[in-house]
Each structure stands twice: as C-alpha cells, then as structure tokens.
Image (tube, rainbow, N blue to C red; front, side, top):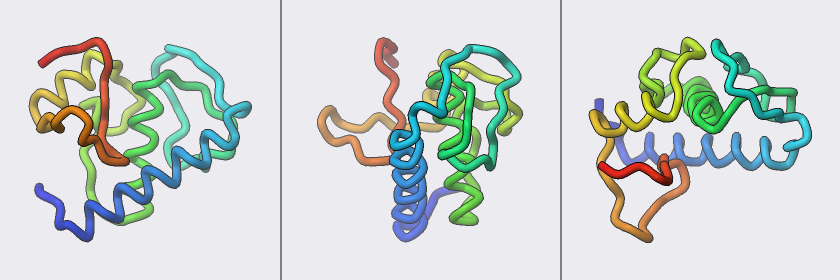
Amino acid sequence: MSLTPTQKTAVRRAIADYCTRAEAHQLAWHYTQARVFHGFNVAPEQPHANDCSGYISLAFNWAMHHTKVYLEDPLGYNYSGWGYTGSEVHWLQQHGSPAPAGKYLVGDIVVYGHTR
C-alpha cells in the first residue's frame, strides 16, 4: 500500500520523535541480540534490550500505532519480535526503493555494509 504525502510526513515525524526520545534516554537502552525481542508499544524513555534491527522494528511499530497508518514490519515478521539485519535487507529488497546517495530523509532505513 502506498502512503499519501500527508501519511508519509506523519510517519516520518513519529519515527523521528521515537528516535529522538530514545536517544535522550540512551542509558535505558541495552544491546542484545536475543530473540524474541520485546518492547513494542513501550515508550522510548523506558528500559529496552534490543539490537539495531530490533530498534528499527520498534520505531516503525511505534509510528504505526501513533499515526494509525499501517506499516509493514521492516524485519518481515509482522512485529513478532523475530528478524535480524538479514531479514531487514531481504524486506528492503522486496519492498524498498533505494534513495539516491545523500538524499536520505528522516524515517528512511539505511543499512551499512550491504549492497543490493
């Protein structure tokens, strides 16, 4: 499903808000690769234990619930707490479109070290 420009703006703002708040409370966040990961619909100021791919899924889920705009899980597992960078790259290959270098927007997923 394609989002309207208004929906895209709202989603990007919600993702930015989530990430800004999480960064402001970074001491509440702890790194782990444990699966199933948890933290869906938990405010970013609260304790979390995730890795980078889990963080992306949490941010998208948060934006979806706060904008009421359906967003697929960028890890490809329907917000179940499963998935990893490889499933994220696979999902992006199936659903994403590459942004031109230097043209990334807030809310874009950028994976370093992988090529299409």
